[in-house]
Each structure stands twice: as structure tokens, then as C-alpha cells.
Length: 475
Ligand code: FAD
Image 1 (cartoon, protein in one colour):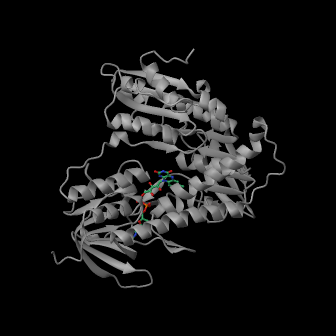
Image 2: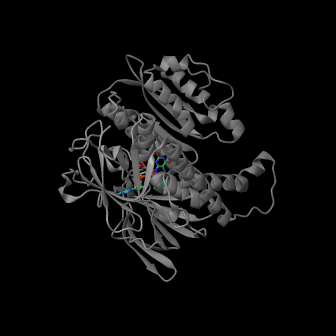
Image 3: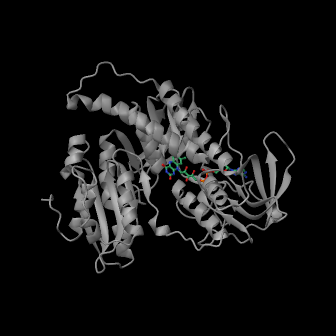
């Protein structure tokens, strides 16, 4: 038995940190997780951004707004006539909070059943094996020791000098999830993943939404062909998307915000009821370590790590949003598992090229692996199989026959390389490609697999068949 307080201390209880702590407890390590999140109503709360102010609350509101818009816009087409649909936004927000509460309390229960000590307060890396811990409400830190330390401090919304957040009229993603009224006119600075999801929520609830995007191309992180399809679909849903639009100034004046921006048509000035700033996120590394700890950060203030999440300090690891790679919950969780299993002596690794991304709009946009453009640039010969959802029976029966599925396979080996989906339930459908990728399957393996009929998954099957030019329901 060592004389250290713990085998492992994790700083940060988001999806990266809490998953690492749970896996460590499973492996028999004496583990503590220090987390400082405090909800104004619920108090200390595990789950980090993801559960408290990110993935989960946004999906709760996306679901409510989707149901509302379907009822309002589509049910008549099914022959269901409903009179007088109204939105009770307070109830929608209360439901969202109930979902968050249930999940965050669930993690607290898991911690107590698995024997992870939840230390509520601030954690500071003092050096290898040494952490300062200041409980909420106290001023003086106490020093704790552990053989290993995992830093999982997560991230916070990036700010724009030209559009300073005031928390009421100009908000970040945290504020945008808590509106108590549907804004009549809403501007969103940034047409990335978060901007598109939040824009969808408030558009479906009835707001007039304009997304102002500084870049001239739409979703450059995604496959260009499907991004064009998505742009068309989002625009048809009423999301105004202005590319190459630079916000010069957003200023609260009276009970609205004057936004001054520059686009291809010149200087523009418009008034909005609310503005959401969604221009990315920054790592929470400002108060994470003491100056003499020796921890190295990169030039963007992310914690420097190698391919296995080792920092420059012995026994100190870093995972999640605060290190390089996509800022995604499942990426952080997977890193947590990798690090803990490595501490336990296993050789676990992550295939960073196989991390799925999803935008939870409708239809959903999901992808994994390189785009066609990236394969061309890398000089990798590939074959492409595609299938439109308009030719899928289940999608038509659901009234959801929009989008397309695209699979890319190596031209010689037929190994699946990538999947790009703009389709209903793409977040679920992409799991099939994930399985195929992790099992190093070929497009033919997928094509020779039986899929239930009718199902959206049949479109994945047809796209796999199409890689060899054998799709059956493609004209
Ligand atoms: P975080 O979740 O940010 O958790 C870090 C925790 O550490 C926090 O509780 C923080 O308070 C605490 N902490 C920080 N510093 C200290 C310290 N010094 N001492 C003690 N505690 C500290 N990702 C997806 O994969 N899917 C989605 O659908 C998705 N939707 C999103 C929607 C929105 C609106 C937003 C904002 C994000 C979304 N994300 C989504 C991103 C996802 O939330 C993050 O990638 C994920 O939360 C990162 O996990 P993490 O554990 O690294 O950090």
C-alpha cells in the first residue's frame, strides 16, 4: 500500500474525467475526482459541460423543438389535424432541466457505488504527484498526493471582442440554452456545429434566425458535396445563413442588439432581439496549474500531450477538450479509458481517424474518416458508393426522405475508409460504419450483410452495394 492519498486524482468531472475515474475504480485504483461545477439551482453537479450545458440540454431542446415543428408543419400531411398548437417554453425548459438532473445525479450515484471520491471544488496541479484542492466555500487549498494525475478541465465558450456577451441580449451557448422567451429575431455569430444546432432549436420554436459566418465556405470540416446539400436543406427550413460575413460590432441598445457586419454586399446593419456568439471553445487551462509545476501548454493554451495523452510531466496525463483533437464528449471519454488502462499496464490506443462527428440538425449530419477532398489530396485511390434517402422506403413512410449516404472504400483493397451521412437518424446510422471501420471491414462485407426491411439502415446497405456499382434501388 502506498502512502499517497490516492492512486489517481482526476481534475475535471466532465465526460473525459468522470469516465476516467469510473474506469479507474473498476480497475481497483483508489480514485478521487475534483470538479468545481456548481449549478445555481442544483448545486455541485458532475458531468461537466456535456451534461450540464452542452450535449444533453441541447439535445433535449432539439427534441422538443423537433416535435413542436412536426406537429405544426407536418401532421396535416399525415391526415392528423390538430387545432391551436401552442408552445409552453417554461415546461420545455423544465423538462430539459429534469433530464440534466437525472443524468448528473446518476453519475454521482455511480461514483458512490464504485467508490470514487467526488471532491467538490477547485483542483490545481502543483507538480508530479501533487494537487492542491480548495473545497467550495474555502479559501485555503489542501495538498493531496497521487501516483497519477489526469487533467480533464474541459473548455469554455470563446468570446469575440466585437460582440461582448452581456448574458441577456448577447449570450454564449450557455445563455442560448436558457432563453425564457422565443426571440423574434435572432442572430448567431458562427455557423458551426453549435450555431447550427442552437439555430435549429430557436427557428423551430418560431424565431427568425440569421447565422453570420466569417468563413466563405459552409462547414469546411465536412464532406463538400453533403455540406452543399445540408446548406440547401437548412436554408429551406428557414435558417438564414450568410457566408463571408464578418461582425464588426454588436452593441446592446435599448431592448435589442444592433449588429454591424461586413459581407460580399458591403456594410450591413441590422437589429436583433438576441445574439448568440458561437465561435468555438477555449481550453480551461488558465487556473489549472501552478507556475512552478512545469506543465507545458501549446501556443493556443491547450495542454501539450503525445498520442497517448501523456504530458511532459511524469505521471501527469491530460484528456478531453483541453488537449488537441476534436472537442467531442466521446473523444474525451475514450481518452480517459485509454489513459487509465495504460496506467494499469495495458497497451490501449485510440484510432484518432475514427472519431465520429455529428450535427444534430434535421436531418442529422454525421461523418467519420476522411472526406473525398482529403483522400484526393492524400493521393489515395477510392471508390464512392452513395444512396439518396428519397429512394428509401422507411424514410418515405416516415415523411423524412431527405439527404444522402455516402461510403468511401479503398479502390484496391475495398476496405471501408469513411462514411458521410446527411440523413434522418444519422447519429445512429453512423454506428454501423463505426463497427465496420473498427473491424476493418470491406464495402463488400457491408454489402453482404442482411438488413431489416423497411429500415433507414437499408440506405447504408445500398450505399455499400453502390461502391461496386450494384445498388438495386438506384436509377
Ligand atoms: P467538460 O465537459 O468541459 O468538463 C470539464 C469539467 O472540469 C467541468 O465540470 C469544469 O467545471 C471542471 N473543471 C475545469 N477546471 C477545473 C479545475 N481547475 N478544478 C476543478 N474542476 C475543474 N459533444 C459531443 O460529443 N456531442 C454533442 O452533441 C455535443 N453537443 C454540445 C452542445 C453544446 C451547446 C456545447 C457547448 C458542447 C457540446 N459538445 C458536444 C461538446 C462537449 O460538451 C465537450 O466536448 C465535452 O463536454 C468535453 O468534455 P471534457 O470532460 O473534456 O470537459
